[in-house]
Image (tube, rainbow, N blue to C red; front, side, top):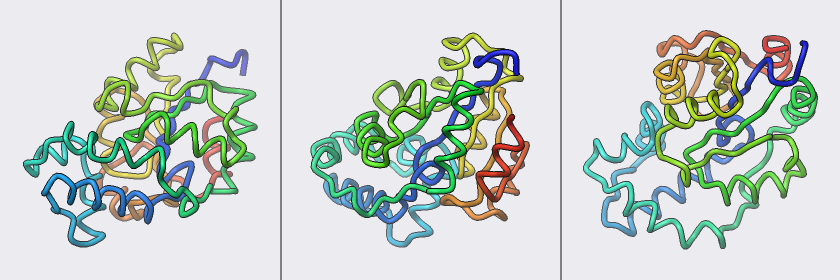
Amino acid sequence: MKNKEQKLLLFDFDGVVVDSLDFYEKLVRDGLAAIGSPVVGTRDDFIALFDDNFYDALTKRGIDAAAFNRAVADVIPHADYTAIHPFDDLFPVLRELKDRCTLVVISSNSRFAIETLLEKTGCNDCFNDILGADETLSKVKKIKDAVDKWRVNKDAAYYIGDTVGDIKEAKEAGITVIAVTWGWHPRARLERARPDYIVDTPDELRELVV
């Protein structure tokens, strides 16, 4: 590659960079219960929230997304993050990619939580920027903002996600979508959403984007 900015790699965080399914299922359940909207009865109910933008999915179910965020805001800084584990095979790949590309986190999670977890995993220098729920709830807008900020053509921008919602929003933003199978949605569910690529390992991801 001629320069670092030639490719812009936009990473979802939960389910792609860290294994946080158990932690966030509990957090979402607790937040919904706190506002009197316990709509998540099973894990399938929780996973289904990510067939779309998470906050849009809450709204479609009659839930005030802002009220939900307020309910969990006080919990996040004091949460026990020991239940969250990095995908160890990914981190060497991230360090290699950072030397060749611009890496940005685009997530429905908060910037505080993402920075806290990256620091705990020792990979707080892996990403050039973080766009979390604090910026805007729409991943489509965050993707477009990142493309504009880093001044790349859309055909040089890739979104790496693990859910159907990720695929839909990246497609709407007009960039290439790479789905990973080590996250929250299984391969069959991802395939139905028709991402541009599906990878099963971090090594496959590296080979695809470099």
